[in-house]
Length: 130
Image (cartoon, rainbow, N blue to C red; front, side, top):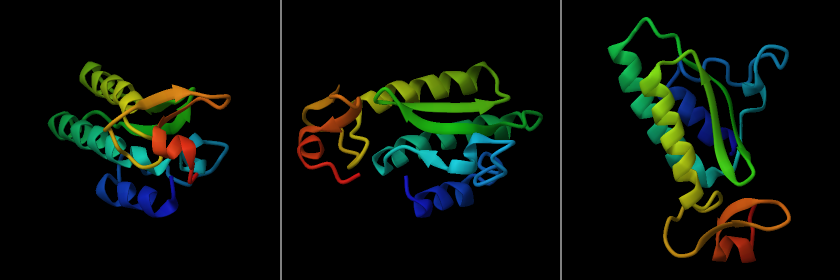
């Protein structure tokens, strides 16, 4: 994901992204979100729902530890959370398997395959932009 999109997430959810670009000895968020920009919407939706939960439970000091792609799926690692937060994370990780990591479409043939496993639509698989 590019830095502009990461900064938008940080502006919308400053507490959740307080470690973005932090010291690499302390956080994997030093490298930002290491996934395609097509999943920005999924991450933003997850953050919005998590923020609602955090607003209801101010004692929870949740932050993102790592956001990345692995084996064609979005991986969202954050803590500390509660059962609801972890349900939200699981839901959006699963949703990433239905959305192109590059262009964000959820229409047509979305597949996870190839020598480098990625979740892409047919168009992006034929002409990957990133």
